[in-house]
Image (cartoon, each protein chain N blue to C red):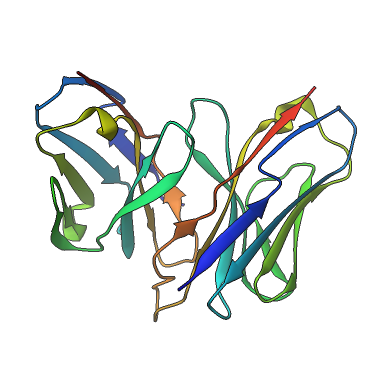
Length: 108
Length: 116
């Protein structure tokens, strides 16, 4: 099965800073999603982005499927952005495989 | 609109006791259904998935089992819990959207299990 690697594993930012999170896949992916897990454990859908670029407010994501990676950009970070960010994808099956996550802490 | 419900939200069980977690999806038909487990501070591990009633695919050999008695109902069970079964269990659904596209994945609120 596919392997999903996320970097960096941990990130600490001051409020207002920008950041880029990366997701690498060992094989081609047909679907790619980004999630934010808040401190209560809830997984919130950020982007469903098999390819191309999408933006939603201060967040944007880019997937380059042919090169097997995706990037999540967070601009002007806020304390509410804290939590764990996961990417997940499938590779010709119904199985969504998750990366190990990036733990983000935004300091006021 | 579609919604997904999981229960119970929290439970504390002794080692060796049985387990039943239930997940129900509303507002869609023939969803793909998934059970994931998350150990403390770790990523999500796929346990089971189902693409139709009675169809269960197991990803990790263990003392857990899953069943799908109805189209939008997914149940995770164990006959005898182990300490290592502690964790955060998440149910998820997607709707098939074409060849090689299982559709966007959506999660329930999760069930936090502590085995003592």
